[in-house]
Length: 286
Image 1: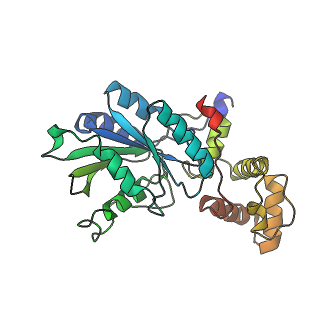
Image 2: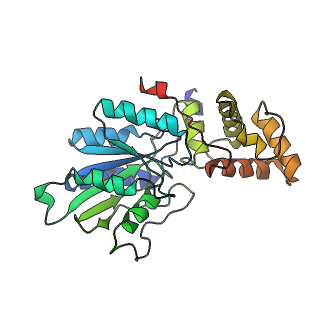
Image 3: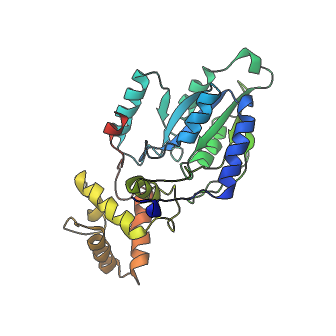
């Protein structure tokens, strides 16, 4: 990818959020770095790592959307991380998987100096990795809080949260979570990373060409010998390209135009209808 092809999506509120994070970081005891389990490395924002290391802060990596990924790959990644002392956990906020275990992990970091004011955590990640859903579900695990309305707004579109705020997530021990907007890296120089992030919704569809995303998705699903993605739409043969797949699905469902069909397929992928897949390889750890 040359300089003219770089993907750059860094709205003003993201820059302001990073500046505010730097001001709040001294108040925070622990970071929760949220990634999409389908792109466990591509959804890492190195800015967060730099910030944590500069201020000597510890973190837990959360691989969210575990219900949508290839779970064997995620488990291998977690095993490798833990061998080098990196704390991590797989969650599904949608299915409330491992949320109590996550709270138990955070409790191991509590300090006496936070006993009165409570422990302050900060959750960070790229857009649309599930931060707001995680926060609302964490509150649901606390009896006194689970009857209250959801505080963090959750949608299927990136960039819903635009401010930095503190939210109570636990009474015993007292814990607050600082919610932050999803922050993208300023420039994505590798086309493949851009396509992956576009597919899982970290980048708005208008930033990455949908046709290229679909072509890449079909190629990856074919390489991983997946069958559900075409059989679920009543197709008998494995499509070789995204265009071939789109035309077959369009004919099957009598869609009005190409864009409607592509949106139909991409939305199906994003909710897990086409099968569980991880787009990043374990080899990226090496």
